[in-house]
Image (cartoon, rainbow, N blue to C red):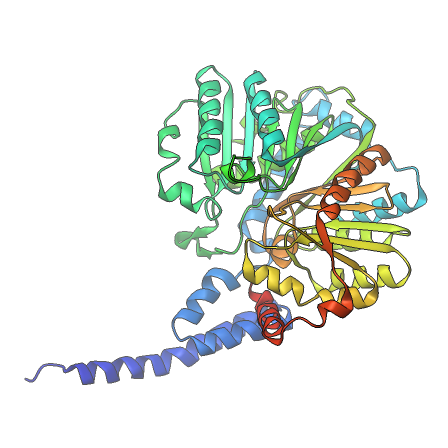
Length: 500
């Protein structure tokens, strides 16, 4: 019998593809209709799946499947499970009785009517995360300031250290943090480290974590939701939070990852970023947010997590009213967008917005334009040179809409601006880990703080004004004269934003 020739084999492959490709396309279309995706996103994915046989369906499986119903989604069930365990431990004389009582006693309202209006809206968005008084929050600019304070807090720890970050680099900064944690674990301090496996791909691939995995008292865990056994293929769902909690009493949060790019060198400035040191009752809220993620990834016994040592007694540390807003692609999927829109809508005189990636949902874009049209001085600060070229171009495709409505757009000169902040009328501030792009607002797990404190808002405003002074204030007439090839590149990048 004659063997199968290459020509016959090629025809067989084409026949198989001719059958499987339409089936795969139909399956993706059916899934999109079943989950009711946004129209622009679904149309873009259908184009990709049809245009790229085999590769297109694989891309959709890894990046497009991200909105499973919350009631059937493991992360949501995990959060609900820990919440039930927490409530069972909040009764009188039980481990979390103090935390329950502290939350009840420190819950408060802002003074001004506009701030109360915003807080009432946030009550409906994140009812389980109350506004708490008695906090102190301090800005730390770039890793030069933040790393020193964070390492000092680690050195002072006596009971536990909980660290969560998107990136840990295989460089002097990554090693410094892991070495300090290993030393504390060897001294009897319980250390839990949660990093994002996608964000820390280089560190994992280069074996960064191997030297630390067998240290008693130090657990280093990578966040991922890719598990074929559990039929999880959500490469898109990343944990972008950056939180450090030490002994349950002090915390750090912001945009700074643990890698050397955030530090200054003789030949290079540090990435421009905002991080924040936090003390007071809100540190316990960040503690619980960390423990939710840790429980999801490890299934560690809630009895070992929800302890009095993790939620110690805390005295008021300052005058800031602060509340946590968590976002993620489960029940909290709209939290970041809703809170951001609400904050924009209560602005009456001035709105300062700083973000490294400006590719927001249409709701936020419209809210910014309407704020400017009603007379609010809206000022947006973004990097002049973006580290993700396509994201920078996609954001620039929106500038005309902003500038024509009266929004002032400032492009900050290098080094790269990675900071995130919103300041409303010198009274309300929003800081944390979320960028103003679809990924942060819809796909990533993020944590922001909403702060009602005039003194803090003015301190943060001075920092933002420093960045604005090093920025180019774009002029609408000049902007419209940019080359046609640039406009095409911007619009092409903008078409891809539903997939980003």
